[in-house]
Image 1: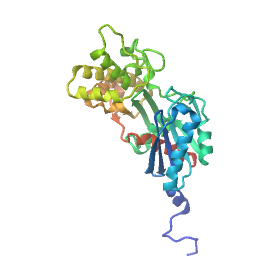
Image 2 (image 1 turned 180 degrees about the vertical axis):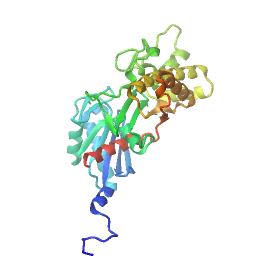
Image 3 (image 1 turned 135 degrees about the vertical axis):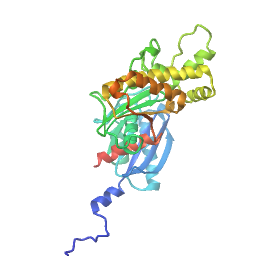
Length: 335
C-alpha cells in the first residue's frame, strides 16, 4: 500500500480537531453569572459562578462575564468560541439585547455578541437564557433525540421555548416563548410583572403563588390580591411547598390553583403547536406531586383528544441546561 502520511492507529485530523474542540459558555442572570468550559460532547469541564454587577451597568456585567471565562481558561486551557444565554429578549441574529427587566438596568440595547467577542477575542453567539435552556435539554437532557419540544420554565417568571427540528423558534421579532403572558381565567384582574393583567404568570409564577399564600394567611380581611410586580424570589415558594407537603390546606389550594392555570395555558399551546414533548423546568417544578398532578390534569383536560398522550416531563439538567445550550450555540457558530 502507498504511504498516506498517517497510520491506521492515528485519528483522522478533522475528527481529531472536532473531538478536541472546547468552547466557553455563559449564563447571565440578574444576580449571578455562570461560566463553563464545555467540550464538543457536552461535558462540562470547568465551571465558575460570579455575582452579576447589574447595578454597575452593562459594561461591568460584560467585564465580569468575560473575566469569569478568562479565569477558567487560565486553569482549563484554550477555547474556540463563546456562547451566551442571557436574561432579556435577545436578537440572536444581531447579537443585541432588545429588552430586559429592571433586574438588569440598562441592559436593553447592549451589543452582547460584539462586546463579549471583543473582550475575549473569539467568535460569540448569543440567545435568550430560556432558549439556551431548551437547547441544552434537547441536546443532552430530558428531550434528547426529540425534534419538536415545548419547554416551559416556571420560576420567578414563566417563560418558554419551542424547539423545532433541533432549532429554536424565535419568532419574527425574537419574542417567541412568553408562555407566562397567555391569558387564563384564574388570573383575571391579577397584576403581571409585564404591567398587564390576567396573564398566567400573575397566578402561576413562584412569587405570585408565594404572595397569594401570604395574602390568604396573613393579610387583613378585605385586602385585594397581592402585587407580584416587585423583586421576588422562588425561595419564598419553597416554604409554601413544604407546608403543602405537610398538609397545609391553604398551601395545597394555592399550588393547585397556580398549576391548573399554567396547565390551561400550556394545554392551549399544545393544541396550537403539537409538540412531541412538553418539558417543564424551573424552581416551581420542584414543588412536588401536589403541583405536578393538577398541572398534568389541566393540560390533559385542555388538549384535543389526538394530543392527549403528549408526555409532560420535568427537565433533567437543572442549572446546567442553560450552560450546555450556550455551548451548543458556540459550537454551531464555528461548525
